[in-house]
Image (cartoon, rainbow, N blue to C red; front, side):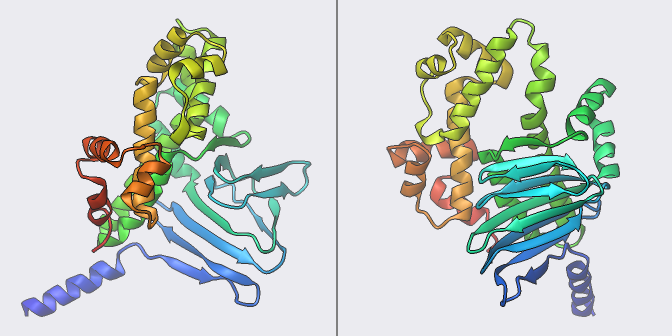
Length: 321
């Protein structure tokens, strides 16, 4: 009787767990697949992995009922919008966020190119519920102006890659726990994304003691670090590159981003390393080198300090057994 009850319970948990729907690219057209998961709140998480034999033109209506966040990990694309002169593009390592406009979009995938996109679609009513639940009216107004009118782009950060690496672990949770895990990762990604898109335009004005030109220089310094983590310049070289004094850079960076330049570089390198350990077959020494550590022992010590586990054990503890 107990065994039968447990069998029914396990069956119910499986049937009520988040389900991944996968569609293969027709063999006559190319290789790859498109997969998606829908959460209880109606958010859609999808992966697009494709390589077509020849150019493929696609079109479709971009629903006004969603906020879209698109991440490009390989070959970039551009698309145009019907009844307008607007066109948009996204390149490898970039992401963009925008509200659907309800119009037809036209896009061409180049033949014999590797495409890898990840997409988060958040229902507009759910997005507003999040805004109203966590932000003040003045902040909401600023977010709406930035997000609902046009497209905002940011570089894909190591932290974003790390969240995506963890997001797939939802399958180890059954029933409602799987949905709860998915929602938590979407909210985590959204919070990181909004900070990247909006922090500088909305919050920077609060740093009264830092002039706009100095803020712009500090932001550019952060972009330089993000674009070349393994070979990030030191403070003096960074200051020269962005035409600001070293003291202004160090003090301003800490004020705006909550940590020193050196601490930020270390933190981002370790985030990048965590993503590589989860998503690639590289060994610890290779990962250490790729993120800027010449000595694996120094890397291992810093990694354990941040994540509480040595690098070689991190993948096993964060993957499904």
